[in-house]
Image 1: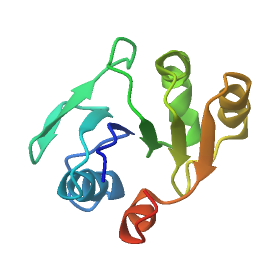
Image 2: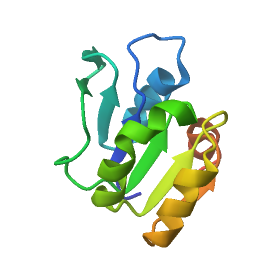
Image 3: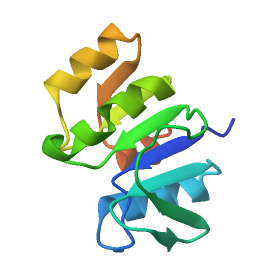
Length: 122
């Protein structure tokens, strides 16, 4: 399996958060992870960065763990990154951002990263 660099948008150091669990599961599956959250920290061997996502290396996938109202601050940076796909995890669905992704030629799906990993669909 080829490693897919994944940007976790909405990363958390809280082990009860799904974004935290996703970082561990992605690393266990051999994927590289870039994590961005509202506070700096560390999850395993992955540092969580705070701030804009502009200037990051291009990820294959962006997995979103932010409610739509918190996604807007990352919109332009996300579009500039031009990932191959964006995953809207449950509760993060955003029709406005989905439209912008389509207009930029970026595919997206409404799915759960943990389920995709556990069913070998990632």
